Length: 562
Image: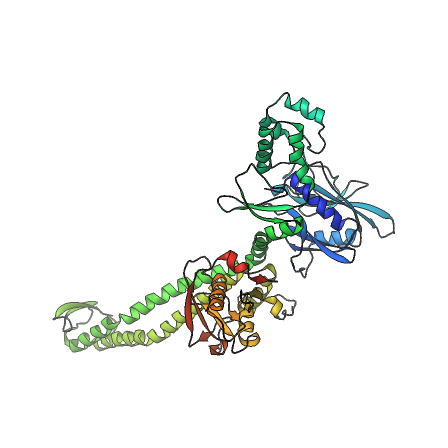
């Protein structure tokens, strides 16, 4: 189900307990439409994620580690000025709509008490976060400034009067009395009544209709509504394996229960973790992916051009033959001739056409063919080398793209550093110290035997893991001839099961993650070498064994440890 009004009502019961009365200590905006508010209460820090993402507008308390950007956007600077250090007095939902108001109390520069409201509107593409003064009702600033031409219903700019968006009139399930309910159902059928209830998405409406079809009574209606006063989460899947999250267990929808979680925030954090990471990575990697695509396009064109040159060079015997035949028949070449046909003694004396340069003597024309032949033959080695370099560079960019596909948001900075050091991204003027790679930077997995597996997330981490972190007797894994992560099994005598499980991890963190049959090489780390001048992540190895596996996402990620 979506973040509808009743879903928000359920979540707020949990969020209020954890945040109300706490001090807002830090604010930052890691991504364009996402805010992190850190509250300090009862000696604990809690991170509130607020997202005005058009596709996944949401809020909940998260345990994810999200980096604070070096440069704060304007809206965050305003929030810090007005809200940092303030106390969260209350959190209120506007009816059962998708508007949540966070009420803060703070002091201004003069020491006077001020009441401020941070209004979170979770309305699809119109989602926004708005800070306004509760007393004057004037907007101080907002996450998305909207020009009057784009929205003629509301003026969404600093200093404008804050007004609510147009709301649909309807029935508030938490406020309707038994008498009001009976008056409604006397006039309309269950399906019509369900349409009049506010705060429901399609799944909730279908579930409520199931309740009222079974028993069209106030008691049945309140049984459904009362479920939203509880703070529990249910993850269910559709027939197409699409996951959905509910604050109650639906009985009238064709869904299969996957898991139950008593901690609503934890369930939401886990539910949105993959999708939010994917969105955040895409936001941060837009520039990098543009560079990768451009370089791949250039390299592909270059390889095609070089292969044509190689084909011409390898089929250059015709120039030598023409030179020899011309040399043998110099007397037949007359001044002013642009072309001559002579018997080809390499082809049963069939006539061969030879183009001539009128400005050159017959002997010089013959020499010209020999020179062209020698030049093209001599170029074969160079062209082959250039093709190999271009193919290696293409593989390198494939490896960078694979790293992005498997990255966490905080990993993109290292990928940008890597491409900057390789000269593909222009360095910024302010020198930024590169973050040191540590074991905590890597992906870590625990096998069923309890052994630890470390996985590099990008080429810098791959090199560090293979050549600095790993013990020379550890087992190194990598997909065969395909870009992917370097994977280290921290053991010198692994069992067959250890090898299979580690190979599945290596296959999953590669370009072949969606393939059914993936060949994975494994060898002792001491057999892995890095050629001089090789790009980050590129290695050679000998004495390897291979195994074929099928990576399965759920099986691989179930072994992951934080």
